Structures are given as structure tokens and as C-alpha cells.
Image 1: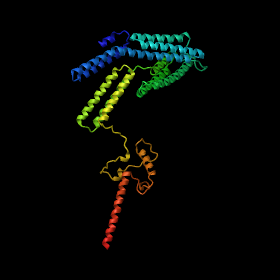
Image 2: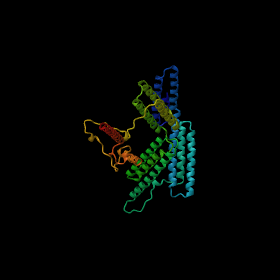
Image 3: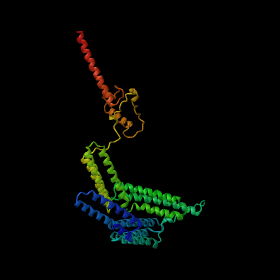
Image 4: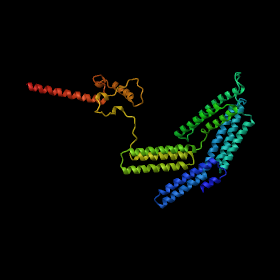
Length: 425
């Protein structure tokens, strides 16, 4: 029934229908799994009711909210493009520019309010279209043009006019696209709704969109080809700075939960735990992971989705901490405590390593790093015979062993002298 309601809604785009029906299938599968794992009739009934609520929400409420989010994103792009056109229009004086920017801002806020107040998908789409038309009318009524589509021709008699125009267009286009990308990434950083990982992901998307847009502009052979390539790139880059549909970040959060599950289970398996406890903990991790995934898939806002993700990550970590599950082994070890087994089939001298030189470039924790540490220790222990050249340059373990041997030899020498004197008397 839920998928039928999606198909019968005339306001949905084909993409919206496909996405919603896929998510309904996921919700049905999650509900079926939860029911099969239930052990009492009351629990079965509760899981069934919860599943029906989630499925119906996907068919109705979520579709409206996602349409509103998309409309808000697209309207913000229209506003940004209009402001760029006004700010870069040379024929406007300062007072005209200020007035037109205020008009665009007013129309944007009015349309945004209508989108947010929409009760149906159709109302949200209509509100967006009305806002877009109103902003575009401000530009056309005041003869505002996009400077990137009408580049200034420099005087260059060595090139045909069309080549001059295209060359200048490309320079201006790339300059504008780079500036837009910087502004977009600043806006992403300032958005408190995003997690750090989401910000990094979105800024990476901006960089990819910028590279694609510049390549498209550079590869254009005519102004008629370059102009739409610039506009498309401008829209793609701007889309990541505006309020973005949280569906685009859903997969990122789900991957973070998958990674946490995999890491936690690997730690449990590697830890020296009772077999029964291991199985119990592994089952707990799987259940916590599935619960978090279900909540992320049915979340109706970015804030709810991020909260569900963080709660899932925290619960998984709590299981590990509460049961003293050992941490994963760090490959980087302190060489002072690293003892290499001796191969009895080889001469002892062949198994001695060479000391690192001062100009050796190595990674942190490598021989050169430890050498620097040892040098520092020698400066702080000038009274230590090991640091004053009395012994060969050995590592700490070898030097300590040598001191013990020398001590034993000294004791034996004293005892021998005493025995000798006693015998002579």
C-alpha cells in the first residue's frame, strides 16, 4: 500500500518515486528481521506497529520533507546566482545594486517561508517555482546580465573576435568558479548541523564539482557551448553550500556505523576472552549496529540522523569499554623494548644491526626517531658510564648486561685474592 501511494502521487518526480520505494523495501526488511528475532507475542506486536509507522512515514511525511529540502536547496542556488549577477553588473551604480539585492533577498525569504509551510509535495514545488520566477523577474526588469555570458573583448588583433571572446570567457569563468568554491566551503564549515566528517565529505564534493566544471569550460570550443557548461558548474558547486538534502549524507553515516561494527568485532575476536562471552558481545554489537542503521534510514532530518549515528557509535564503544575488550595492536613499537630473536644458525656478528646516521630520513617510531631519543637521554645522564664512552655503543639492555658481567668479574677477583692470601698464610 505504501508503494502504491508513492506511485499514485502526481507531484513526485521519477527519482523521488524510485528512492522512496527502495527505502520502503529496506524498512519492510528491517521490520521483518525484528519480528523474527522477537521472543514474545507482545514484542512481535510492538515491532509490527513500529514498522508500520516507519513505512507509512516514508510514503507520506518523509517525501514532503525531502521535497521541501530540495526546494530550499534549489532556491538558495537561484538566490546566489542572482546576487552574483547583480554584484558583477558594471552598469549598476551602488544604490541600484543595494536596492536590487534587497529585493532578491525579500523574494527569497517569502518563497522560503511558503516552501516550509507547504502541506503537500505539490505546494512545495509550486512555492519554489514562484520564488524562482520572482527573482528572475527582478533581473530581467532591470536589465541585469550575467557578466560571464558577455565577456569584455580586449584588443588583440592577432586573434579572431570569437577566439578573443572565448578566451576571456574561460578566464572569467574559471576565476568565478574558484571564488564560488571557496565561498561554498566556508559556508559548509560554518554550518553547525554537519559533523566534521560530513563537512570534509561535502568540501571534497565541492572540489570535485569545481574540477569537473573547469574541465568542461576549458574543453568548450564555442561561447554557446561554454556558457551552459559554466552555468551547470556554478549550480553544482553552489548545491553543496546550500541546505543539502540529508539523503546525500545518509550513506556516509551508514558507512561510519559499518566501520565501527567491523572494528569492534575484530577487537573482540582478537581479545583473550571466554568463548561464551565473545559470542554474547558479538551479538550485542550486531544488534546495536542494526538498531542504529534502522534509525538512520528512517530519520526525517539531518539532526535526527546524526544523533542516531552518534548514539549507535557510543553504545558500541560502551560494550567494549564495559567488558574491558583490549584495544587493537599498534604496529608502531618502541625499539628500546623490541627484542629481535637470535637465529642460532648464523654467527652472532651477522645479526647485529647498523646504527642509524644523523641524516637518515625515517618515519616516526623508526630507528632514527629512537636515535634522537637516545641522544637526548645521554645529555641528561652525563654521569652514566654508558654515555661517556667507557662501554661500546650498545643498547640499554646490552649495556646493563655488560655492567652485570663486569661486576661479577670484579667480585670473583676479590674473592680470588682473599683465598690466595689465606693460602699463603
